Length: 203
Image (tube, rainbow, N blue to C red; front, side, top):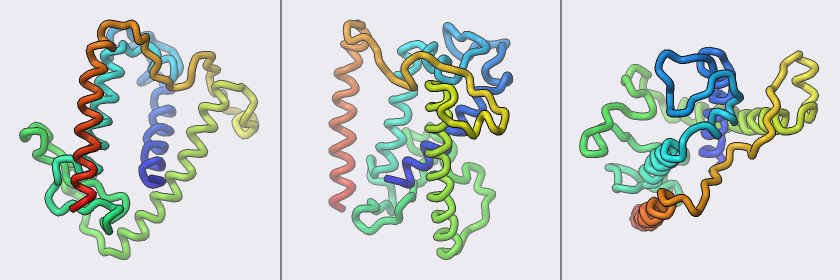
């Protein structure tokens, strides 16, 4: 679990930094999504994404998580609770009826093969980097919610834009007709995910 949390935190920290740059938060010739507003904070960017877009993101991440937990029974996959390798994500290239052309790790097959010792050192470094990223991400979020709560930013002369909304939440109206219909789909997906995970864990 810590490996996954660290990977999410690393992606979140880098995402926060990148989304704070004018290249991403500035004006675009083609708007990234309907209702896009330039010059806002990363949290406000999330708030401005339409509900359908948020659901697409959550569904996509859920599909990746399900596959990583053994959904679909990838060839050679052994769940980490059954003696499998912690942090291992099975190859995803060719899945989804052949619609996925690249793997998540080394998508272009250019990295050299690593020995078991090198993989162990790499995983150790990844865990440490993930821990640091978790601290870094929460410091960014805390500073944006309570300016001055992280004095290191003042010492370094770094200004984190204040955010007064709800931090990175997904809080749709339950009265929304789209949510009422999509809820059934999410429920079925959640059941199928748990069944797939249990089936993979018992192999």
